[in-house]
Length: 359
Ligand SMILES: Nc1ncnc2c1ncn2[C@@H]1O[C@H](COP(=O)(O)OP(=O)(O)OP(=O)(O)O)[C@@H](O)[C@H]1O
Ligand SMILES: [Mg+2]
Image 1 (cartoon, rainbow, N blue to C red):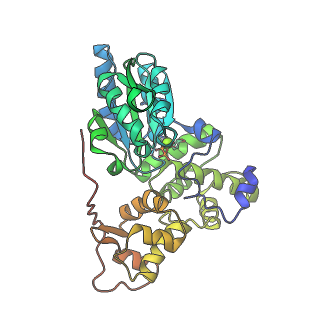
Image 2 (cartoon, rainbow, N blue to C red):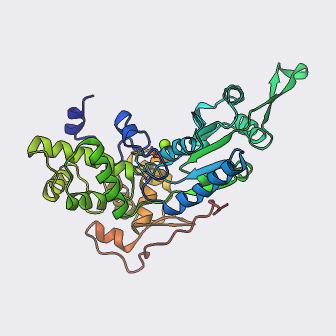
Image 3 (cartoon, rainbow, N blue to C red):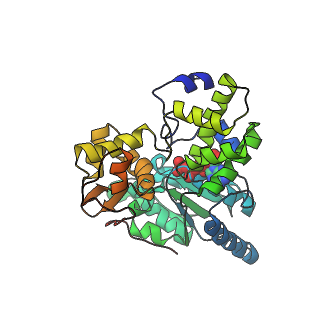
């Protein structure tokens, strides 16, 4: 599919479409490559800097690091930066790819001392591989089982000291033993508009887009706190500016382009609005379970839970309660409806099964 087809396809939303996947080469070219270069997440950056500098000073490998947060906030970029800062190589795999323990054993036995092993979507790792990972993380060895039944023997195998970097959009879905083996957890949070603005201006520089200050603020405000969305909107706005104007992205051009793509003032796209609308109109504002909501909008429950919901909660439109998801008064107003007198206020986030954890 060419860029142009991508642009005119009305079924594609630039916001949630492919949010869980990347955008290939362009995305790669926009990745920050050092901690210095990484915009936003000041706490995470400072904490990581200490973890890495401490390990370097001791001449050892740093503790295993877990990066958690919604999609598109820079977890993969950060994993690459960790390896770059350590001056080592990054071996990349993902939870779903590690279906059998043997897949992981092969990966682990190929590691060279100091390597960073990056496991994306680590919450989706299969149980046998996960159990092998415990041992590898703690003792830098694995037991490879050879044969079946009573004749099976387990052969211990040394693993070179490495640093595991795990990324997850659902840290609550990680088992306790796995979570406990990470020495440091970095919680990536949504970005503030001024940070997104800096990211946009940086990306525009790399892509050669003439982006004005006001236009960058306009796009930043509608990027749902997410750099990947900011970069994607920038590319869509650029198309608009090049096709319908002289290529310069002014605030008015940005506004007109975003209107074409159905991205509203809050940055909500069609799927977000469908979720809100189902919650309010079909379920009277809730409480309703996330899987029921997903069925109502014809989406995967994981997409609704990991892509839409974190931002709707953060925007104060949806509250998570132990009994299910509830529309806040702001959600009713967003849809142009009068909230019922008992509508929830924003900012409520009571999660029952997701333990909060730090170090
Ligand atoms: N702090 C940042 N500064 C500049 N660009 C960033 C930053 N964080 C992310 N990006 C941009 O956003 C894009 C998405 O980042 P990345 O792939 O690292 O996210 P992710 O958290 O791994 O997402 P997912 O959970 O979907 O895998 C990158 O291509 C990069 O260009
Ligand atoms: Mg990623």
